[in-house]
View 1 (cartoon, rainbow, N blue to C red):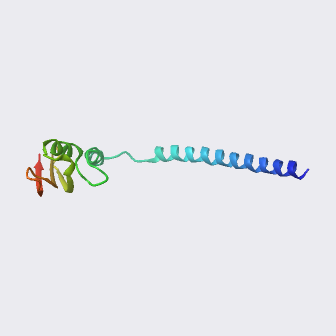
View 2: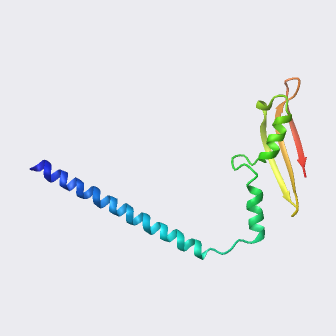
View 3: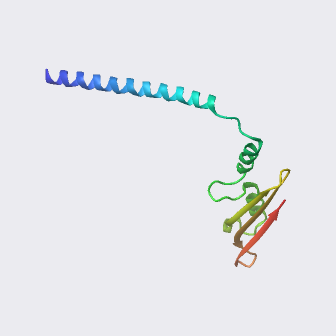
Length: 117
């Protein structure tokens, strides 16, 4: 008798927990919908900034395309080490400056700077 009673209580608690999870999940979806309705539209500057930042790594700030071009032209692409990348947005174009280290043709490690329009 005690086992049946314990199993019944366990089943009831489990069912109650599932109902609470479903209730919380449905209200959070409604909250998300109401949040998106009240958001103000983004300005052109904000949209431009988001577009530009998609081309840069969130990990180290390097420009993904420029990094690929640099590695393709290196003697030892595995030796590539990003140091710093900066950019200036000129409206119609970007000026990207990056500094990196890598092995030269003689095996020595050198630091290079590159600026691309």
